[in-house]
Image 1 (cartoon, rainbow, N blue to C red):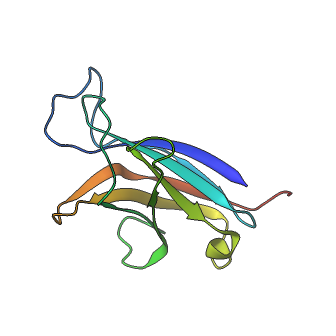
Image 2 (image 1 turned 135 degrees about the horizontal axis):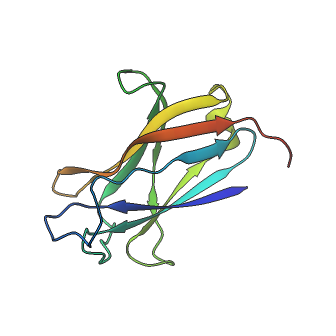
Length: 134
């Protein structure tokens, strides 16, 4: 099993922490043939936690930014054991069975209970790597 930690920012109009530019970008690496867990912490630009309960968080991957076809779409679950601002995506080995090892692009969006959609992680590189062992 592989575990990755990401931080996404919900742009609520608050004053960003010094040096923070939105959206944030983060390279993500997934290994074929094993379970990949992505733990996402959602913060406001000022660094305070944003509670994810009642929101839908979606990770979407495509071959290129211009593609309409998605190679992977995952919805996160809230992870309140870590805190109200945490969510977890689980990418199983079977999710990547038909996804060749190569570079893709992905982003993470949050849809609020009221229907507003916000980019938490901007279009970034996703590397799907061949598994090299257990």
